[in-house]
Length: 170
Ligand SMILES: [Cu+2]
Image (cartoon, rainbow, N blue to C red; front, side):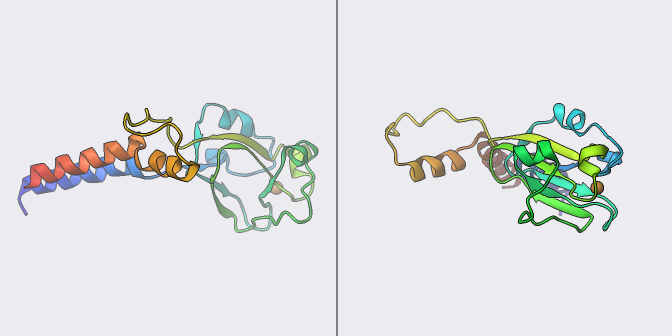
């Protein structure tokens, strides 16, 4: 392998994750997930959560848990019994759809008196691309969705990078 190839591999290693990998957020960063009245809304405020990103709730297993709830339960801090809590202490939640999401700790009064609650807004993965000129505007929803996914800007950048690298190597 020549040194040129090594440089190209290094570039791939640096560029690829920024394009292809979703962001993992440790909720509360170094504070992690605790009932110490940490400002979780302040923590979330300047972040853009996208579909595919991952929330990681870190805490001492057994001391806390994570329950996904709706807006009403978030306000009341009472999780419906059927909402199964996550309890591993290293709980990863992939944000699967856009919209508002609410999480609380279901242990004791951690949510009500300890501020252990998080509400976030998840946005769609990529901005809507300009439609293809030849694409009729009355496409059936499944076709529109697949075109949307395949032609997302991130994917186009990814393909361009791969093509450019391939051109350099050959
Ligand atoms: Cu707790």
